[in-house]
Structures are given as structure tokens and as C-alpha cells.
Figure 1 (cartoon, one colour):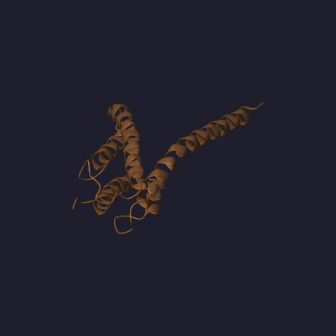
Figure 2 (cartoon, one colour):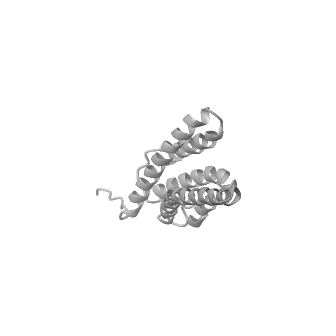
Figure 3 (cartoon, helix red, strand yellow):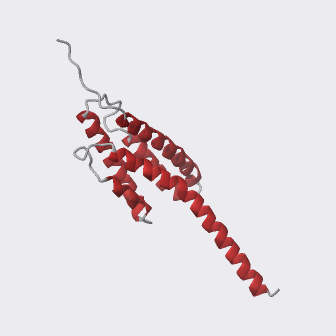
Length: 152
């Protein structure tokens, strides 16, 4: 076997492994975006500060780095508007915004050499916590709307 042939096989194998890893990494990202989309769909159109389908813009390379900050802020505003509209109690003024921004900042600083190892890991943990928190708000909105009953 020639060196160029085995080198080409090695390169093709490495690219195939990289492609499989990227596909595996894309699955949780897609599930995360589906969760955000569902949360926005559960908000009344008048409460939304962004359309549910706009969460998919986060998949655009480089643009997604900025768009996630905007998405976190708009989901928080949409949730606040919907909770107020339904007269549901709010645990925080802008639901999920602080945790979401921490997630964004930590993940963004994950590219810094050495420090990025710590901030990237912390960003990953915040991503999971943010996903769980937003899913919790989504489940609250999925339930039947509460009707305020006033004693006579």
C-alpha cells in the first residue's frame, strides 16, 4: 500500500469520525431548540416578543453566537408577558434571563485558552440548568389556564 493511499484513508476516516461526532452533538442542540420553540408556542401571540421559529437562527454559524443572547432576552420577556396575561405568579421578574445570560457569557468565554476550560464547563452546566428551567416554565404554561376567583 502506498503512503499517499494510506494517508488518504486516514484522512477520510478522521473526517468520518468528526462528522459522526458533530451529528451526535447536534442532537441535544436540536432538542434544546425544539424546547425553546415549544415554550414560545405556548405563549399567546400577543405575549411573544419573537416568533417561535426564530430560535432556529441559532444554528447559523457565528450569527448564532449573538442570536442566543437576543433569544434568551426575548424568551424571558415573552414568558413574563404570558405569566402576567394569565395572572400566574412570577418567581423572577424576567423568567430565566439571568441564568440564560450566564450560560451565554460562560459559553462565549469558553474560547479563551486555559480559562476557557473552566468557563466552558460552567457554561455547559448553565446550559443544562437553563434548559430545565425553561422547560419547567413551558410545563406551567401547558396546564389549563388559571382563572382568578374572588370571594363574594
